[in-house]
Length: 151
Image 1 (cartoon, one colour):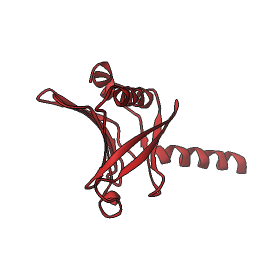
Image 2 (cartoon, rainbow, N blue to C red):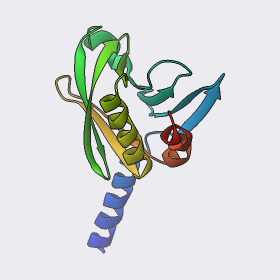
Image 3 (cartoon, helix red, strand yellow):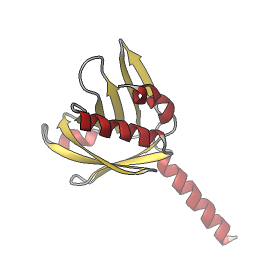
């Protein structure tokens, strides 16, 4: 009986870790497409497909505003069911922004979207700062589908 209770408690803890973020949402506004999710602390992961300009990945956290100086570069590590991906983002206010301004960056962004869409959950970490966010990928496949098809 003790083992059954322990196993049940571990299952609840494991699912609660990923239940702390909201399902994915998407929006299209005047031709620009957006898809993203946020957690209970308002940390957010947002993919942007603008009408003109380079696609972007934005990771937002209130912690970045006081701890991360603007215009510095930081490596973001994404851990999905498919493995790890890293991108280098530039800090601006409370956001880290990855601009997919060249072909290699666009391929990296495309693969990251595909990896998240194929996962149940994912984590984002910024090692030097010690920041980590865990998000559900519930609804990511549907929200990211138009962006993966062509951004």
